[in-house]
Length: 209
Image (cartoon, rainbow, N blue to C red; front, side, top):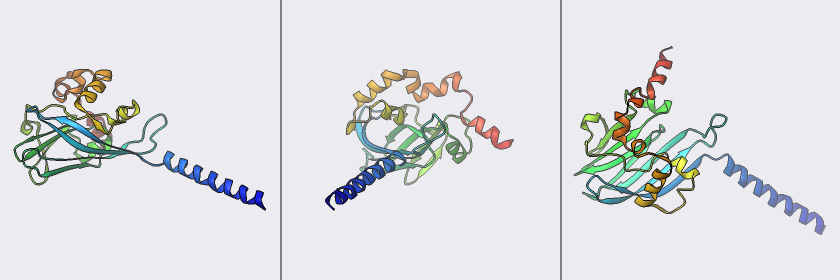
């Protein structure tokens, strides 16, 4: 009787462990972190960020990004600002002038291309003055450039996301370890001939066939 009880307990515990492992394995990946962000005027703020992606993609590839979110306070007004993206774009710039927040995201996945009507640039620009509005690059302040940690899933795979706070210094170390300054700079990417053909062009052509 005692042996039977021990066996039942063993199988129950084993089943619970297997269930937890399988749940973790097949659950969509999610990361949360705080990040120091240097603004165009030299001030540093802290933003809260979240990102989530599918647990599995095509064979040999990560799952597609599902959503990302950035939350902070406007350093000029104290008003809370929240950006939520459900199409897999990668945020590069988050900055402020007066009451207005500005954001630039790089897009390369089909769902983002479709959402933003297959733009002719690899970046889409926004400003917030009560609600987020899509704007042209000409309306985006020329003094703004990349100040956010991008390709966060690559950073997570390289154990760069383990700290509670991603500091300016840690972000710089990550960039230096795998990215050139040209790749890091949104302005340089936009001006590089290699990127003259927008990532969304191929998707736009496929929808016409």
